[in-house]
Structures are given as structure tokens and as C-alpha cells.
Length: 223
Image 1 (cartoon, helix red, strand yellow):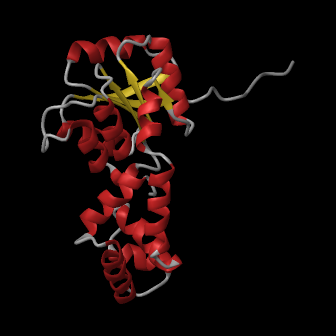
Image 2 (cartoon, rainbow, N blue to C red):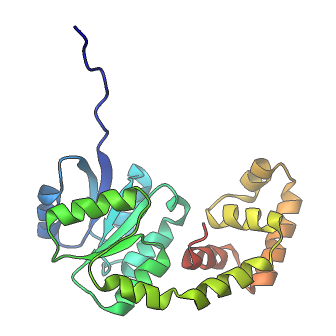
């Protein structure tokens, strides 16, 4: 008699970020059983700390949050820029304003849904974002297409064309939060060479420091 030894599919690890405890509690109970809420946060600072600690697959992120420098959800994403390949962000808000949608998507979120959708729909959106797809409530995707049209893509290509292949490698690692020493070890070059490439990248992109470089890369979603 054979036995099925297949392991169960591991639950998707999620962090819920919203400044209303009642909403967080309701959302937790509405999510499907295969989605595991490993932490909750109510402010920008709490969110960044929880995300770095738990490294979830997806962050359900309110757009408007107290704390930080007033940047809300977009500021949380910027504070977790080094994790953008590992952790994906799904904005969840009462607002369906074009400005809110574009701001958080430009920061690096993979989708945006409004709080009027059902728990089953949110669960489906979490799975899609975790798999690398985008997820939007009806009509919100149009805001993104308007904001990230072919002209925007062409501008990014023109800017990247200014960089050599090696400069592009260095730029991506620095933007992800790597130290000069870590970049040097990863690319098998000297720290002085890394410094030289970073100076060249900043000059070509007309940026002042590595923080602006990270912001530039996050805005263009090229990390």
C-alpha cells in the first residue's frame, strides 16, 4: 500500500501594514488559509522593521500611513529597496485616486487594489503578486498605463544607454544596498574600481549620491 509523501504547499508569508487595527484584524480573518500573516504594522517605521525582520513574500500595504517623513506606503517601499526582488508589495487602500496609484507603483509596488474588494479577491491578488504578476482593481490599471507609457520606457532606455555593461552591474548592486566592499567581491574587482564606476554612474545620470541612485533605480523599477 503506497503512501502519499508529498509535502504540503508552504503558506505564502505576508505582512499587513495598515494604521487601523480593526481593519488589520478583519483582513487577517478574510484571507485564505494558504496565506500566513506573519506580522502587522501600523506606521512607516514599524512596517520597514517588520519587513526586514520577516522577509515576507508579499506586503499588503496601505498607501497612507503615519510616521516617517510623511511618504506613507511609497516611503515604506523605498526603505525596503534592497528587498524588492525578494519581497513584493501590493498596495491596499480606500483611495482610488490616480495620484495615489501612480505614486506607489512608481515606488515599486506590483499592484494596487481598493478595500472594497472581497477577501477571496485580495487572496487571489496576493498569489498573483507573489508569482510575479501585477494585480489591479478594475479601472486602476489605466492610470498605470497612462503614467508608464512608451515615452517613459524610451526615456529609461536612453538613460541606461549612457552606462557601460560594468557600470550597469555596479549601479544595480549599489542601488540594492550593497557596500563597495561587497560589490568588489561580487564582481571580482577592486574597491577603487568600484568607487570609480560609481562616480562615473552618478556623473552620467546627474545624481549626487548613492541614496539618489537607489531612488532613481526604484522609480524606474530596474533593480
